[in-house]
Length: 319
Image (tube, rainbow, N blue to C red; front, top):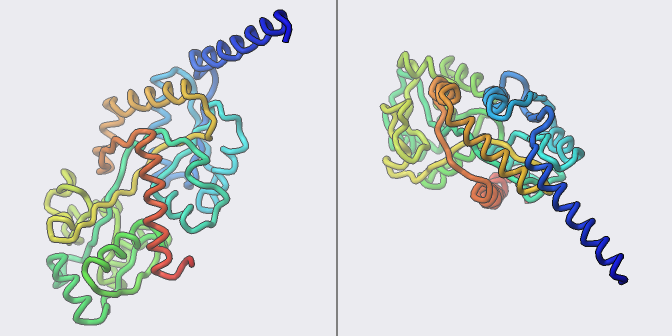
C-alpha cells in the first residue's frame, strides 16, 4: 500500500470513529420509539408509557410508545429487528420472553438483543377466598396431597409465569394438580370470587381491592422478603417452600447498537426511575423495585430460558 493510500485509510478510520462518537454524543437527536408487544392498557403498556413520559423529561426528545401485538411478542421483535441498530427503537421486554424463547415459537433468541434494564417487577401469589378453610401454604399442600389434587387452581395463561410458580410449588410440595388458564389475571380473580376456582395464582396487584377488603386472602407470596405492600402475606420461602420469582419488566434494543448509545440510554433510564413521578407510580401499582443491569439481566434471562425449558418439557408442551 502506498503512503497516500495508507494515510487515506487512517483518515477514513478516524472519520468512522469520530462519527460513532458524534452519534452517541448527540443521541437522542430525534423522536425515540418504545415498541410494546402488549395491548394498550396492559401492565407492560402502562409501564412503557409511564417510563416514556419520564424519559422525555430526561433527554428532551419526544418518546412514543407503539403497540405491536401478536405472536407472543414476535411481531414487535420482528419490527425492532428490521430497524437500524441505532437506539431509536427500544423494545419492551419481560421475563415472559424466557418462556416464549423456551417454547421455540419465535425465530429469535435472547442473544439477538441487548438487555438494557429491568425497571419494575411483580411477584406471584397463591390466593383463596375469605371463606376458604385453607389458612396457610401447608394447608393447601396437605389438601392437594390427601385429595389427589382435587382443588381447582388457575391463573393467567397456560405455560406462563404463574403456572411456573404453581409447578415449582408442586415439585417442592410433592403433589400433582391441574391448571385452569385464563386470558387475564382479572378473569382468574373473578373466577375465584365466583367459586369457580378454589385457589388462584395471581399478581397481588390484580386483586388489590379484594385483598384490602379481605375478600381474598394470600396464602403465600413469591417475594424474597415480605412485601411492604402486602405485609400481612407470608412469603412462600418463610413457610418452607423456596420459591422466589418475579415477573420483571424492562427494555431492550437490537444487538449491534453502539455501546456509547446504550450507556446514554441506561443513564437516562436510571435518572427517570429515580424521579418522584416514577416512585409514585411504583407505589400506586404495588410494584417491586429491581436493579438488574444490562449484563446481569442478559445472563438472568438466558438462565431462565434453561429453567423454563425443563418446566415445559415436564408438562408435555415441548420435547
